[in-house]
Length: 410
Ligand code: CTP
Image 1 (cartoon, rainbow, N blue to C red):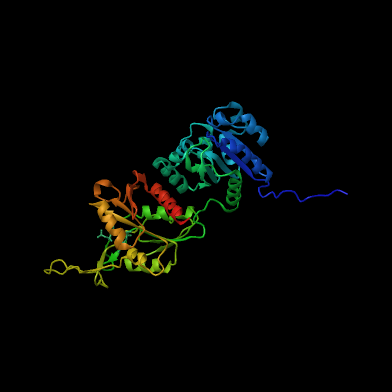
Image 2 (image 1 turned 45 degrees about the horizontal axis):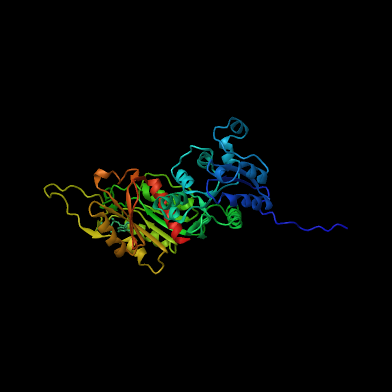
């Protein structure tokens, strides 16, 4: 009689992992990682940077993965065999372990000068990074920025962990996650996708409001809605269930977003309150501060000899302030501050007054071209201080902001 055992569980059976190994001492752990992934049924295709080959040999990596190791962007045989574009797409997940500060900087900036970075920019598959570096390098502001950008681009991270560095003497955050932790993250991602805001609800306001004076005239402003719409799209890409309350704009609805169209500030407030409870509120709309106290039911006609009619204004509700002090206040409340002078000082005042966790302040003086334009140059104002972001497209600001929110919520 032969005894049979059920054998090890194969949660990754049939899954193809493209493993990018970059050059750090933690590359030695990638050998064990390959074994662990294959034990669970995954097929592992390794790509090694030049740096990685200084730490482990392609021979060892090839032996463990029992296949070809890809190292060269300009290898005629490799390009004829699969080519870097197919290599990038012919897998269920791209795993970067170890992910060095250098490779992350390349990814965050879209560089593609070697096979590893070219594959990473060409892939349309989920990407999981397992960073490994010296704690000072991990804490460096440039690395922080790159990590935030990569998160905003939808990439997932595992680790780094705290502990002694391999080079000895230094402790802190920077050790690569252990192979089994990485394997668990791979399994989660292959099941669930890189959606750090999955299950979270968000409400975003965008665009101007139109406040009627009579049936044909209204008070408005120059807001295009580009920034608010981009933020709704970026939160959706990270998995959030987003309600976008939009004033009158000419932009298409962002895909996958529940769009509620309104005209006036009072309608915008009602739509936002109906979207609560939510985890996240990002109030980007340029809400008109005032509306006509008594809009005329009929078109106001010129009266010969009487001169222009007086226009009496009354204050609109402050939507951000209402949400920031609401009984159902979302965990993260973000406001914008459109200023033409004293951007930081006015931003700090708004943070307090409106009960927000973050004010994204920008200078909207006409010479900046921000209002109605496609780029934005913002300062992030929180209780903890002020961070200035470089001049970015409104899509980039949106991606980074969604990453900032995801990091705080998770
Ligand atoms: N906001 C709002 N409702 C209003 C006015 C503003 O929700 N009635 C929100 C905006 O969406 C933005 C923030 O408050 O997130 C700041 O808008 P801003 O126009 O810069 O500030 P105001 O509060 O209007 O202050 P002021 O015009 O005096 O600078």
